[in-house]
Length: 253
Image 1 (tube, helix red, strand yellow):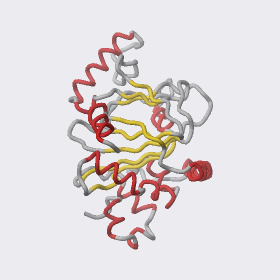
Image 2 (cartoon, rainbow, N blue to C red):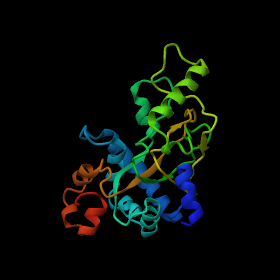
Image 3 (spheres, rainbow, N blue to C red):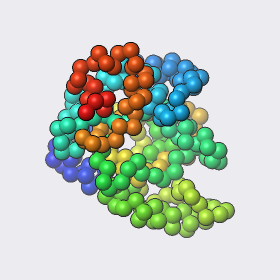
C-alpha cells in the first residue's frame, strides 16, 4: 500500500488491488459456501443478527483467517492511520437477494451509505463470481463519503425525480449518477473501500450467482455490529482465543 494508493482511497473512497488470497483458497471457499448456503437458508437465525454476517460466520475458521491476514491488517492500519483496529462487521452471500426480499420489483440495492463523514472504516470485498453488467455490479459515488449524507441524498433524489421513472415521490433511489463508477468485480481483484461512500447496485437480470465476502476494519471506538454474532457462532471456542484475537474481533476492549 503506497502513498498514491492511500491518497486515492481518502479522495475517492475506494481502490482495487490484486486478490491477496491464493486461487486454491478461493476455490475452497467457493465450494464451502455452496455447501453452507442451504443450511443458512433453512436456519432460524436470531433476528438481531445481520443475515450476511451469519452466513460468513457459519463458514467457520476459514473466513476468520482471511480477515486476519497480516497484509490486510497492515493495509487497514495504514488507511485508518492508527494501530488499534478491530473487525466490526462481516458478510457473505448476495446482498441484492437479501435486500430485494422486501418486495421491490427489481433485484437491486438502492443508493445508501453505511456510515457518514465521521465514520472511519476500511472494508475488503472479494467476489466469488463475476459481477458483470447484468449481474448487479456495485456502483460507487466517488468521494461521497466526505460529504454530508443529507446533501448526497437530496442530490440522488433530484436525479431520481428527473428520470421520470416513478409513480409517486420515491423513498428509494436507483437512477444512474453522472459521476458513479460501476465496479465489475471478480475473484481476480479485491475492492478496498470505505462503505461510508454512497453505493448501490445495478439490476441483477442474469441467472448466475452473485456472491461476495467482505469484512470491515474500524479504529478503536468504531462499530461492533457483529461482535455478538461472533460470540454466538463461536460460543464453544471464542473464550479460548488469545486476547489479541478477541480484541481484533471486537469481543473485548
